[in-house]
Image 1 (tube, rainbow, N blue to C red):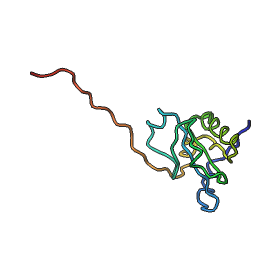
Image 2: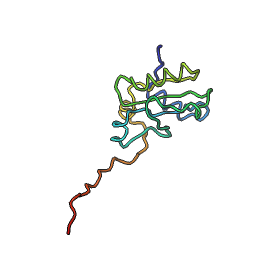
Image 3: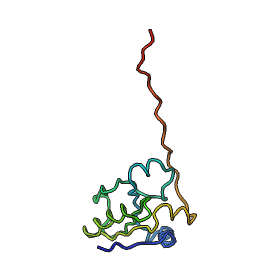
Length: 123
């Protein structure tokens, strides 16, 4: 199945128009998501392969993005949604292309290092 692509410029234009604003879904793999400090504005976060269809409106366009230059994760998720009757597309170039276009992003917390716990008791 061929999955439609949308450019960063076209997505930004649609996001700015409340009447046609798509639902943007972040489907990055766990490691790239956790080690990033940015998301697209208003994006819904789900893991790859776990888009909860119960929260999706069947008549609203859905744009998925990931961090893979070939958009493989987003393409697989979009393909599943299309097969279920949704209008879905993939952000060309993912979050990297969006950021390179200097479009706005939202900041999310950076990963925190765990404090080592010593198992040696003092006594």
